[in-house]
Amino acid sequence: MDVPRTASGRPAARHRDKPRHWWARTLSWWGAAWHDFHYLVMPAECVACGRDDAALCPDCAVALRRQARDPFRAEEAADALMSVFGQTTLPVVAVGDYRDILSAAILAFKNHGRTELATELGRALGRGVEALPRLLPGTGGRELMLVPVPSTGSGWRRRGYDPVALLLHTLARERRLPPGMSVAPLLAIRPRLPWHRRKQKALGRAARRANVRNSMRIRRRLHRGARPAALLAGADVVVVDDVLTTGSTVGEAARTLAGTGATVCGALVLAAARSPGQGGGGTTLGRRA
Image (cartoon, rainbow, N blue to C red; front, side, top):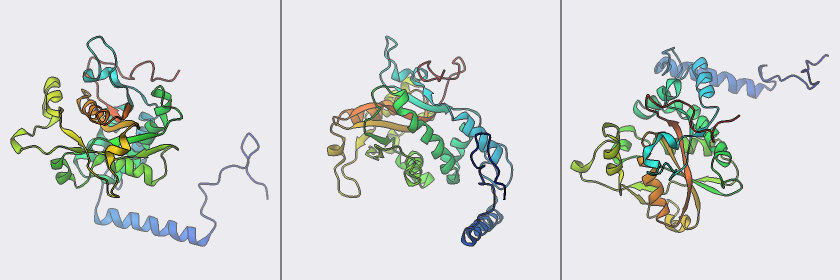
């Protein structure tokens, strides 16, 4: 029997054929049946275009991957991360611009409980993780701890999950973290009295900086009894957040981690927001030729 081959002479891929083993065909059938039952009981629609039966339809999923395929340096869009002399105080790698499909998916994931988007957004974040050695000078070949910015107490109670930690957990579960990188949820939010709590989204740039000042702390212990402060001493860390706006939040997280003796190599965000006067694409350092 003739085997289809590619132009290079290798056997053509058969990933679109039906599984050869009966047990694989059975699993595939049950998976499709469960998918159909799930959306019959709890109908869903695409968060971007509104098409039925998918949190992100195939066309929008492709568009999201295309939007997140080229991570770049984005700290110039955040004035809190730039000194008065125009020098970077904290380098930031962004997976994509906060617009179009990516912004719609992040909003649905964070604010509307669409946790089924964690896989697609987690894989997008994974592209940023893979780009860290290339875009953050001096991190190549070093062990890095990825430290998520923690969710506030009110955010946790409203959602029931921590968005950034969930994305990193998805990456770790799917074994998509490069060798030498690990997830370390070592930060926590300091409790505040109700009349001192203000949402970042409703504040201006200067007010955002003041609002997050001294808002984070190092966790006292991890679930296995390890002391985070001991793990951080001398460690190379990267702060991870969802959206970069003014840079106040990742800047405060970096300051808190540096206070324990850790070396903060930079930050990684899923998307970078830009003002109308700023062009897309980040700095020339972060863009591929």
